[in-house]
Length: 280
Image (cartoon, rainbow, N blue to C red):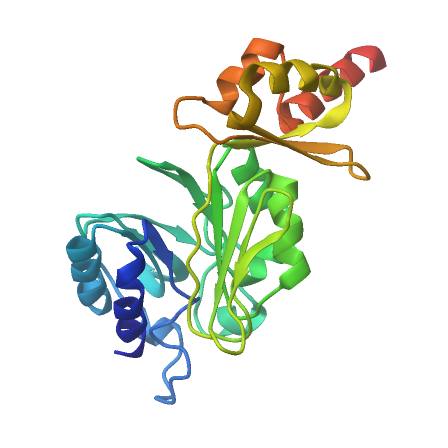
């Protein structure tokens, strides 16, 4: 009921997607039951009111709960679409020893992505942030946003994952600040003392992180042609630049193709292939 109350507060902002904290339905429970004992099977009864909320408000919801599949319990995040239907789930790849002692199983080592009409999202959960494999796997699938429901805030950890994956990174936690991080790792918004329960902020998915050199040679031509419709933000010490379209008619990837610019990930992958060739 408390979480549904928070969702009611968010309605005025007409969010496209909301991510709730890790295992929010069982957080703080004093029933004495283990995680495994509280696992839900489809259709996940505790999520019925959240499905109704998603349908009534035409938004996506990411609901982290304990689920049971094929006789095994998982710490998972269930994705609900704008019609209140369950799209699928992500199962925590790296549960803690304490979780496993209480019946939680590690999830598959290949995390899924979810293609929504506004972009591609991925999910990692809490302790997953201590491993690189899940984040690297998601990064190769080029998500626009990676959501991280967690039991702890992980400030610099989640900021690092944003630039490392060249994606927005969004944390959701009951304990400590939740954050929305830009591709550069910069904090766009976060909960704080006078706004503890939730945050909402717009993000522009027409942004791509690139390596500044050698593409900086094209920046004057981009500015001359597109003017205020393209934003070029350079981070001198990191040798990064973010290209951002400020016009709905201009796709940043089209501009990059026009000037032969690769994303940071593509630039590094090309160098890696060349290095392998020269090692032969």
